[in-house]
Image 1 (cartoon, rainbow, N blue to C red):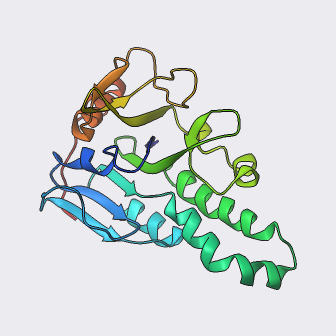
Image 2 (image 1 turned 45 degrees about the vertical axis):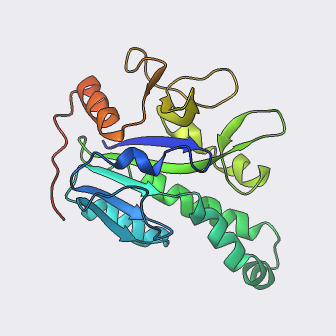
Amino acid sequence: MGKGVLVIGASGMGKSASMRNFNNLAVVNVLDKPFPFKNNNVISKQANDPDDIVRIINGAKSNAIVIDDAGYLISNYYMANKATISAKMNDKYAVYDNLATNFWKIINAIEPLPKDKIVYIFMHEDVSDTGKIKPKTIGKMLDDKVCIEGYFSIVLRAEKENGKYIFRTNTDGQAVTKSPIGMFPEIIDNDLLEVDKTIREYYELGKFNGGKE
């Protein structure tokens, strides 16, 4: 059974930068944008189609995989298809049904993976009407269909505190951050490689294999 980890944070809070210390990390780069660091050992593939992403996840030799800017799978699909889908299906809710199905398809592909594979999903954050900090989607209708954070036992939040980039591992009452008891202290360094090591030690998954694609 594969493991999924959700990482949320505002733009510029270090989500992508946290990958900087990995060698041979498999990355699905949804926007195909340059990384904010120099590391020729990050194996990046551009994809924004859910079926293509599922194929990449299933075929990756690396046992750590990142889907960077995953939230844009939602917003890009919405902007590109809202008019045609609604007109074709004569249903203003149809686009949200498709969005929910597409994102669920990616999340659902994680569990059947080998138990030592960890998939990290990076998303921007949003603040709800009640002040709750959560993954950014396309409004309440989609959130009602797919509560994204509910699919994950580990949700980290990228933040900047006292001039230092960090991950927060448990909720402060507002954010949806969470992690298993005893896995992390409340605040950890912004270093996905160290996060990966800690998760593997906690679940006894062995080491990151650094497999080349």
